[in-house]
Amino acid sequence: MRCLLIVCLACLSATVTALELTGNMQQGGLVIGRVEPGSTVLLDQQPVKVSEQGVFVIGFGRDAKASAELAVATASGEKMAKTLAIVPREYNIQRVEGIAKTIMSPSEASIKRSREEAAQVRKARAQLLDRMDFMVEFQWPLLGPITGVYGSQRFYNGEPNRPHYGVDVAAPIGTPVSTPAPGVVTLAHQDMFYSGGTIIIDHGYGVSSTMIHLSKVIAKVGDEVVPGDIVAEVGAGGRATGPHLDWRMNWMKQRIDPQLLVPPMPEK
Image (cartoon, rainbow, N blue to C red; front, side, top):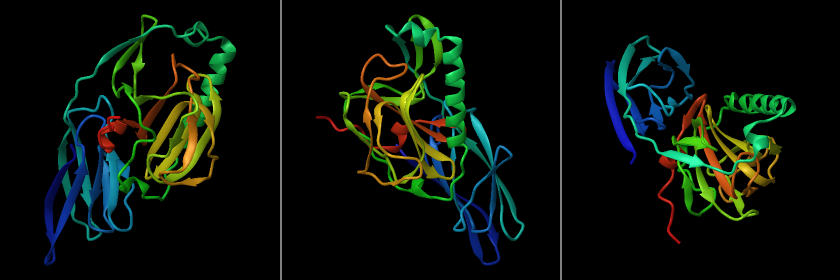
């Protein structure tokens, strides 16, 4: 559930300056903040982009610490601080068998290729576009059974791997995939080594969606898209044992849980 936290921090002249935080104050959560226009914001001493209207967004990764320090400095010079309590979560353990040996034990050429592709992904996610599409309510890119959840630790062919950072939705190959929110396409790749067809849609201020294992990427880099626009089709490429969509989200380098931003998956 989303929570609303409003903290009055100081009185400037005859008006009250408020820090308003709306979202999920937990591991994997995304939080939208509002401050007095012209203010600067730091999260754990790192600058946070703030709009002319005083809007900003922050996110907390899978293993975020129990607290974070938010500092605000107003245009008039007032300085304020707030300790944010980050709620911890428990994660599932999943075991996935049947991954091709070419994926589990890649050749030197494949390793080189995957590193080059990872650099493309990092470059796309590093953009800090002046868009505020993250303010809208997110939608499911497609409907179907949820077969994998954020944060779960996966063992591939018995070997421990990095946690899963997305939500998996099973669907037949070729099923249309829409964008979960307005944005601009910053990466469109037809076939990456680990992720198959891959598309990244930037929603502004460091918030982005990544959708992988696609059989076909329809949208192109630079396209502006809105919910309802078909940007790709479900596939089973890369490190996948069957057709599904793996939808991931980032705030900057922090991995965000997409399921915290959408309503429950409708039952068919």
